[in-house]
Image 1: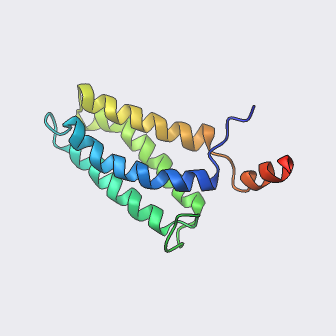
Image 2: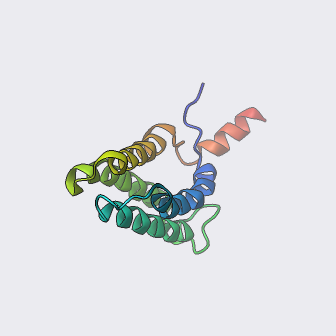
Length: 128
């Protein structure tokens, strides 16, 4: 069984909802009460993620100038920053959990579940 099912196309379709979630979820959860940076970091990251997705050379990119590999590298950097943020910025409780879970999810998707470029085409041709 192949666990690397997040192809370039699947990743492209996940990017916009994830960006919107990074913007909206902190408000829904009430993040920022303990430390305002818990709100600001997620919202700013969501806005940047939305812009990056618009600019990425993949299926849902609008102005396709950022290579997909660079997009994934930025995603990985964001995952690492989210893991470190509670320690560096002093988040506690729900705020810390929010960042640790999001960071872990991003790193899991980009390192473990992300299919290498072109693998989606190989899987499709193998099934044909």
